[in-house]
Amino acid sequence: MNKRSLATLMAAMLASPTLHAEEAGSDYIGQEVVVSATKTLNRISDTGGSSVTVITEQEIKNSGQPTVIDVIKGSTGIDIASNGGPGSSSSIYLRGADAKYTLVLIDGVPVNDPADGTRSPNLSNLMVDNISQIEIVRGPSSFLYGSGASAGIINIITKKAGEKPEAYLGVEGGSYATYKYYGGANGRQGILDYSIGFSRLKTDGFSSTDERNRFVNPTGLDFEKDGYENTTFSGNFGLKLNDHLRLETVLRHTDANADYDNPGVDVVGNGQDSEQFSGRVTLKMNYKPLTSSLYYGFSSQDRSYLADGELSAKYHGYLYEIGWQGDLMVTDNNTASVGLNSQHELIDQKSYGLFASSINNDMASNAIFLEDQWRIGNLRLVGGVRYEDNEKFGDKTTFRIAPSYAFGNTLVKCSYATAFRAPSLYELYSDYGNEQLKAENSKGWDFGIEQKFSDRLTAGTTCFRTDYDNRIAFDLSTWKYAQVEGRTRTEGLESFLEWRPDAPYSVTVNHTYTYTQDANDQELARRPRNKVGLTCSWKVTGKLRLNTNMQWVGSRRDSGARNGDGVVTGKLENYTLVNLSASYRLRDNVEITGRIDNLFDKYYEEAWRYATPGRSAYAGVKVTF
Image 1 (tube, rainbow, N blue to C red):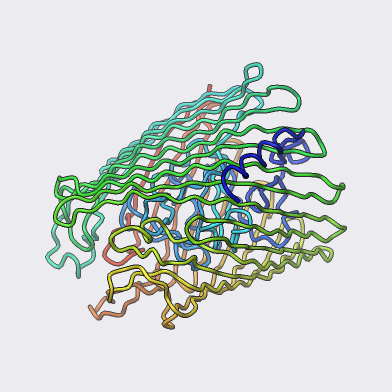
Image 2 (cartoon, rainbow, N blue to C red):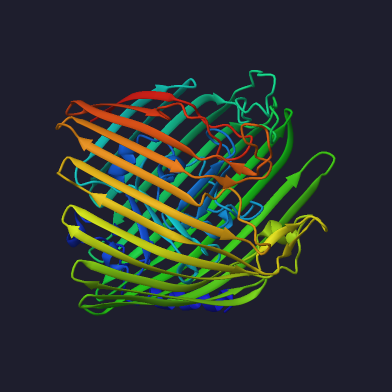
């Protein structure tokens, strides 16, 4: 399907009377809903066999954490490894898969950087301000989202206007000479509704190279602190044109600067400047039983690196897409969806110095997907297929089927799906690139049971497996990217328990067991086999709330890692972290907040030779108008 025929088809469909199913009705008020699992607004219970975690605005607030990375660390099926403190590069391993297999969206816009070597996501600069919900869908999702969603997706959703106008200002400060101020407003004026927010964070930080690692710093020197700054603006705007038409625009801009070290070496003069700008404009049309939307989305990312104070490299990645989606309520228990999408991405990269090089290439793809959702008694069935035509490697067809059935208070669910990942522009066209690379293929399944013991107690467990073929890796013998023969697999078990003994209390426990094996029968690096998360929240009074978060992370493989005796074991030790947070409403419009991270000052590393924060405390105040 060429671009002209796709545009013609979208224009023809736009002329039909339609609006999008993401528009929430009153039936959904106060219930946990998700968009990302089906690209339509659904209760989680109606998403069939999907494995979904929704982190609500209240849960984000309860955590007290400033970044999305910090909020999702304790989530089921997710492992994070950061190369230092705030703003440093972080890898997201969803169900044990390489970071490049997770697609990250902000308000539905893909924000994986096209200029990144493997097009992996990096959420290090994403603040939680003005975010209403984080949705995590585990399992192959290419049938809805195309390339890069082989392990699953993470969708970050910006706040919309509330029923009443509100404005707020806040300030926070604490350890590592950290301060943050933020503010925002939301409301409605005639046909316009809006939600805007800004934040500014600055910290002296700590050395990215772990000065507490005696094998990195045997003489006990004081390493230089690697500071970080972040300024973020975001907005969500809506225009109700009439009872059937609505125009929405979401924008997010981040300007950040982070100091960094070379691997295992404390360095003065290394820095990274980052600028990220993403947005989406959507025309929603509601002519029931058909609803639809026409959208344009974009993501622009710029990174500049300084080495010893001199400019060493610049990266510019840009992606834009235009698409249309229609959702037809065929009957009261059946919704059929069709989506069209045309996406274009480019890389513009320059390196300076002895190994100067440059890349300026782009790639386009067109796609169509079909999805059908059934609700028949206690049966929920979601299925779909996607056809994608990429100008570089040709066409791919992926599909997914995900049924669930409720036997009283027992829910049985499963899914099976195929997925793919296109080679990144860097893997294709850099000096280390290989234009003969083909798409990576994968297939995965999961099977789970959830039991509701009472209105206050629910537990569940899900087993999963995903196999990856044609995996792309760097070949040290040729210094080029190449296709790896053999199969890489990730498999495991995800379990949870949610207990609400009384209205003011809630306890959530999750455990993830993950086993990984590459084509050489080696475990993948930095993925623990076992991880446990515990979250407790207690609304002590109408004014005071206390929250506790605990994470136990098991040992995991990492090249060069040593034990306490200096023996190279290639294994990072397990660790336990405990974080506390609290909020107290001093007045109706004044709230005091505080948190202590790493309460017991546990020493640990997420990646060998890279530092993590010790015990740190922060306090703040927020005023609402």
